[in-house]
Length: 92
Image (cartoon, rainbow, N blue to C red; front, side):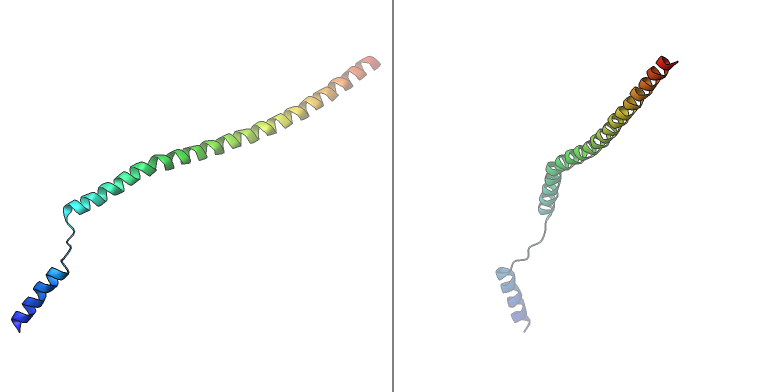
């Protein structure tokens, strides 16, 4: 009985060999993960920096547009004050 079990275990080992994970396999997997990270990290970093810079540019452009409109309003009010001042000066 014991011989049969040993024989079956030997046959099982021949048919289905045990696949142990060794150090080289682990090292290969880790190096491939590091390589993939090195490939994609710069791309992600650059895209993120572009996004934040474009947000800043958009904010500054909005402020610039608002200031241009305020400048137009102030210019028209100055023109009207000058006009009123010239008319009042000629009356008196």
